[in-house]
Length: 167
Ligand code: ADP
Image (cartoon, rainbow, N blue to C red; front, side):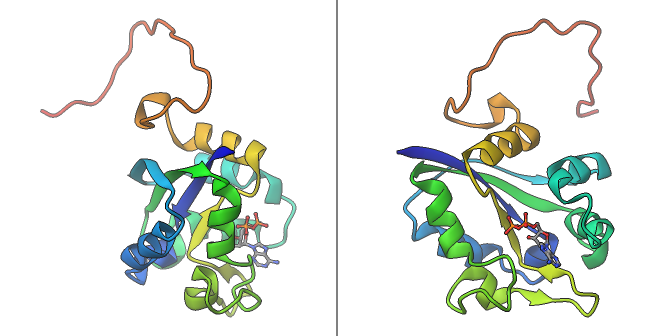
């Protein structure tokens, strides 16, 4: 069954120069990358992405973490992996949310840590199920940024649009 999954390399992963290592590990899945970009994460995007965590005591820290404030790296790398059983394959390689509990051979087990304030810094995010994958992919990517048709789209007319272009 073909599935798609959002993968974010979080600011700690970028700061630790782990992009290559993480992509190499994920390539073991033989899944296809169908979208990729660097994103400067606004507070609005961060809060929407983690809205299911808003009652957690570490929510504010989590927002600062994904925005890169904690690591002085104000960006994440966002990707969509696509292929057979993608969600389980990527989550198995990523390992458990708590990096201390994650199998040491997994990405989080190898590279994650718990901060002195108790936040799990676990170097990457991966969608947990199909519904979350759909919500998250639609939040992080526009249809034309993904090279396969994942979800239905519609054409709308946009009037009086302003946008930034190269000067
Ligand atoms: P996952 O990222 O594995 O899907 P969650 O959606 O439950 O896990 O949590 C989102 C993020 O919040 C985690 O990746 C981690 O950075 C942080 N987190 C989750 N649970 C805890 C916790 N109990 N203590 C500290 N940080 C946590």
